[in-house]
Length: 418
Ligand SMILES: NC(=O)c1ccc[n+]([C@@H]2O[C@H](COP(=O)([O-])OP(=O)(O)OC[C@H]3O[C@@H](n4cnc5c(N)ncnc54)[C@H](OP(=O)(O)O)[C@@H]3O)[C@@H](O)[C@H]2O)c1
Image (tube, rainbow, N blue to C red; front, side):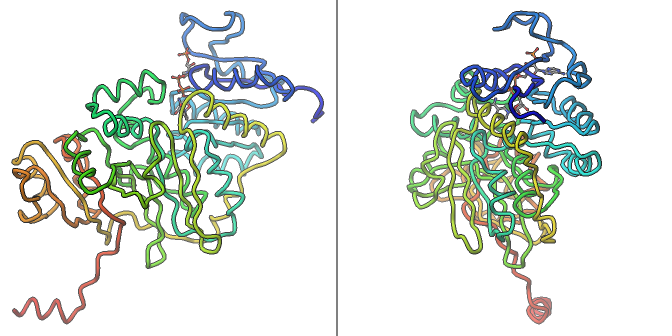
């Protein structure tokens, strides 16, 4: 390709991220990047650019041989997969920000790149402006990692921050996050921890070579969080954050989960507030690393899209090197974690304790039966997660995930004889 002529970009989607990316390019003409065509969905929406700039059929951009690369930033994962996979079948270079789509279809997307020679980059899909995918994929490609964890969702972090600094209720704090453009079109994706789960699945591929099915990764959200939970954490000198974690277990396998967690000031995530995201990497030889940045918003995410466009220009592609490392996943079976649970009704909390096989003594004294703590199996949490969400029970982790100790055979026999 002639490097002196401007690169012609086809932009699919002109919402928060698409406009942010467009704006960044307008301010930096020296980059030599031109958005030649833009596709959107609705012909009737008012636009900030003249009507003739828009096409309403993204397929026209796919069929345009004059476009050097495509940027897909739409909010419809099924349509995004159709467009991105069609582009890869043509051997094209394409950037996407759609984490739900990438997490669900990663094995097919990797296979399409290998078969047809195209390239897909998706840095903007995980933690907005934080350069985490390329860091894991390229910089740490040959470094064994112990853990990659963090705050991967700006919207729920914004809600939790507002609840603890202003004493705001959940509803108004969520409305604020939506008004500021930090929330996904469907807020359940953010508040139910589906969005950070998609991001954890994507990072699992680059950090540990694991291609996980998002549905099999435990995710607990903050829809049930209330002032009582923020106050409980504060009474311990802690805060509640939604932490997505990929952890190597003592048996060498890797687990993945996303849950609210109580954290103290010693945690690198304690002061990651508002829409900011933070990622901690525990590397075997290089030690601990921490990255913090804006996890959402037009300009930060548009900046990550621009970084991918420039990377495509220089021929970069993901190596997926860790796929050779042969890690195995252990998602819930044989694992346990200490949790905190609350429901305003003692009867509803009692029901949750039964589901999770926690004893009545798990109830915290002085809470009228509305708050409890105890150690539960991840399998039980996975089995009851929908029921817990529907019942409005708030559940948060109090510590790290551990292996359930195996009971020695003699002890089992002795117990049976007793
Ligand atoms: N917002 C963030 O901070 C953020 C951060 C990281 C990643 N992301 C990801 O980036 C993507 C875009 O998010 P967003 O916040 O920019 O969404 P958005 O503001 O809702 O904008 C979506 C855009 O996609 C267009 N669109 C939808 N379906 C289309 C189709 N079939 N063909 C062509 N255009 C179509 C819409 O067209 P109309 O204008 O006609 O409605 C709109 O312009 C999502 O995958 C999201 O998960 C967002």
